[in-house]
Image (tube, rainbow, N blue to C red; front, top):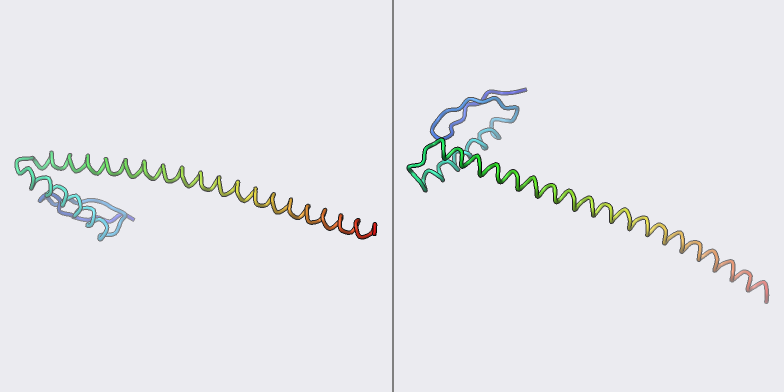
Length: 116
């Protein structure tokens, strides 16, 4: 269900539809507004449009870097899971071999005791 919210960014009221909560929507608007104010405080002659575009570029950069980091983490997790699966298979094989060797040792002990 989408809600209509009015937020203030760059000195302008903006009505928008969002399926998020009012708190979350306001938090996003406050962050965008904060970044615009940060840019305009450093360069007071910059237009609101240009400041907004710089904020959009900065946010897009952050998003792409986060997505790349997430993809790298997924790849690492897959490698760890593959290594874990392989290690479990090796462990299980080692346990089976240990059981076979234990059985062979027992058989040899019985044979040896019968020869005495």
